[in-house]
Length: 289
Image (tube, rainbow, N blue to C red; front, side):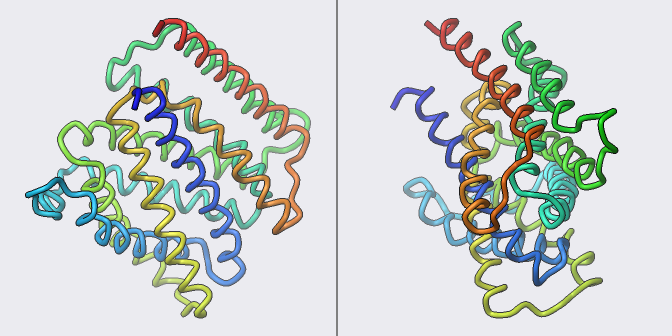
């Protein structure tokens, strides 16, 4: 399979898993606090990753080979990811899912900037245009000067920065470890890190809560696995535009399940970001040819 198509499919799986995971988080928010939801997501993410390991291990290789040789950078990635998760899960319970998703499109902006600074990735002019276009789109969604910037919106933006830094840390780790080993390590560390905050607000979930937590963890493992595979193949700035596929994956179930429709500013801002990313992608394809 050609590399561009392979990367596209991996990134679309990541987008779908993340969007559907947010829908599950919204349902769970009616029963559990965000920090406890995050704990169950991490716990079941670890379980699903451990069950998946034997299925994807290379022939003759131990399924857990190198899985628990955890480098220090993975602690940093786990802490950043937990911070991002707390921010997003809290915002999901306070904002329309479409608005949360639209604001989270800031993540690819930080990926591009971070990839250039931390890894010396060559960022062509088209990618910088997409980055600045994305910043304009984010400002439209925040609409500064027209209304007070809401606390949930600031939580989402904080979450995007933490998530982007975590993803870049994972990219560094992907040079030396398999994708699923990284997911397994992250899930284990994030479970340990999130247990204390969850214990402070603990409430035993219902049977539905347990099942939703298992579904959320499985979707998270799938999303992280496909993202890590994509990051191992391509530059962070190259895969960033595919993140915008989360919007249609989010607004359709959000409309039918919760009757939510993103507001005008969110739609216009995300359209600006998408247009800039589409321009960058077309320029990249021309450059490849």
